[in-house]
Image 1 (cartoon, rainbow, N blue to C red):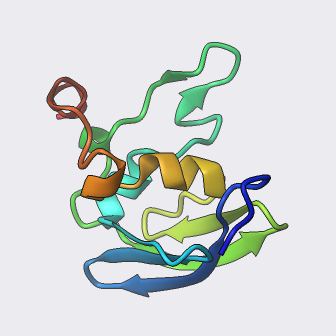
Image 2: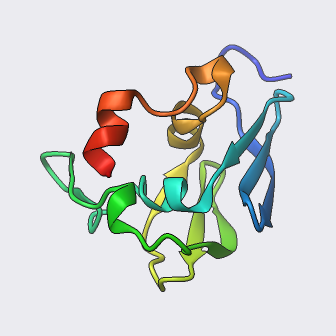
Length: 118
């Protein structure tokens, strides 16, 4: 169990054909479809630095994209290597937790945001 003083951390990452599965140290589990996660990459190529304006959306990512590999970055995130050779995004644990598409965290992205990505 995590203490209230720190955010949950990812304790295990598993890449499967249906997406990236995360186990959290507070017992929660997250599942991200490959394209959804790639379309939400937080790197400076996908999000303009300074303005935080997203310029790469899920709709811009190939439908067959998948995470090919991953590595931990310090004690705060993971970096994914994508089949489209993209690899600059560091997904912090806080970012991934907020992005979690499960019902506990608000379900998939809001319809207006989903429509904008198509």
